[in-house]
Image 1 (tube, helix red, strand yellow):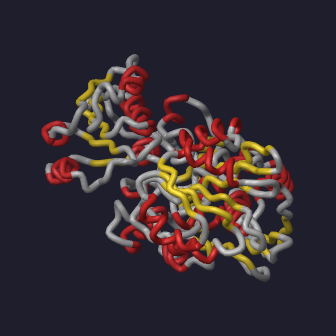
Image 2 (spheres, rainbow, N blue to C red; image 1 turned 90 degrees about the vertical axis):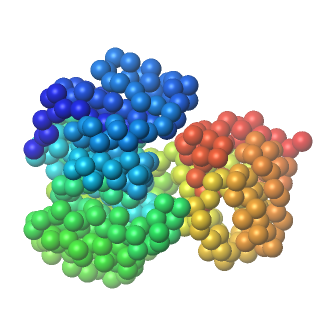
Length: 456
């Protein structure tokens, strides 16, 4: 049931993409909207300008607790921690605090939701699920991937299904949000700069299933204990995916064929042939996507066509240039160690051929899990950004290592070091916020630099 916001005072916290969409939605619904952000009006000039036609007030350059305790509803952008003292004050005053996804979900009516979370692979899996649905019905694809959910009710578009990528930050602030199908891919160390530890991080992910009811489905990676435990908290049914022989109510991959066995008990067979789904990690993503699509009734022939035609995602193992026998690969979306490990593992070991660009704003996790992937694979390590010293301490003994400071310098050095048959791989294992506004901006910069890079 939608919230009646007519005449209510709504405070939106954080003027990033999701916050801006939430502010527009609340204003359209007749609320008196104020947006607060710690950044200044100068820093937010483009965002403020974009909201110019909406009836929105601004309280920038910091938060005033009085704004939080004198409103009727607080709506929180995903990047804003719920531990913010002002949010605590609002809650003590009995004021509801909702995340942008929770707010927008109240305007979806009876449209079913398929939601995907996990530390790694969720963007690829969400995009793939969207591809499978969009060949069969009208689907909205967004959330943490691309378009905020609030944009759907704003658009007035009629859809048959909503497919969402959800981060732990977004799941922290749900209340009634209920996916018909929820999928959790994995839970590995990430965002430990925001969470007290893995238990707290995993608990945020597990909230995906807390409002599910009998008849709903939780899809989980059977080899990930935390993911599996989270899925088993559902009141619905659990479907697993993983490698190995066929199993009931499961997607399984023997390395050659993907098989899905649903409620009918009849095994279905799918082939993974597209270049965009190369690698073991992408076969897992495909299993999860097939399970989500088939549970929701997408025909098997449509699923196979979608698997064959899936183009992949920008900034995730994306080939952006090939010159002089050197491949330049943009994996800027690898913002944590586990994701970089997946990216590195996509290149065969044997001859050291990868010039690896690593660094940015670290997440207080160890880089040691990357050590086994260096021998026979990494030709040189080029570090950049705030966490370069930590990376060099943990990995610098494994081979030639250079501190480059920024991305442009690293690309220039990579062009000097890479030869025919080599790969220059930007897979930072870090957030981008020390030098870029987003991993997308970092990836676009790498694409531009790679297109003109040459050895001095």
